[in-house]
Length: 197
Image (cartoon, rainbow, N blue to C red; front, side, top):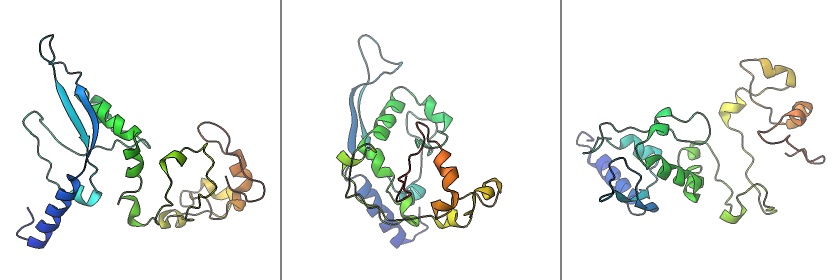
């Protein structure tokens, strides 16, 4: 309900129509459900519809006939996953994980959430996404969020300061520290000439 605001209602309707125009089939078939028997079982078709943050805030979330509650959950692969996601009913978690593992998950990274202060991303074909694939044409826009710049430190010594946690724009300022920094898998290698990781 938009309190009689016809323009806002039209915008909402257009966004909902656009959302449900497409949709990607994530799974079709048998469902591992505790209500299944030898003579009767659940089958379904699960779709992925990607909703923008703007529309998500406008959508009224109401429980349906077989759900007691409905809410948005953070299921991002980075950061702490909402514990409620781990307890999804029947096969629902598997379907969401299929979306996360598919190309659809990659599109989530460039949706309107990222676009608020982020420049247009360099287009990368699906066959060039993996980091171990050589892609000499790759030329992303240099970008550092203003939120990081506010807390940018100018030396390695400042890393212990609560108000100076951002790596400096010039990596040469903390080159020795960066050479020792490790990823989850291996030490980060740096190109001797350019200083790039």
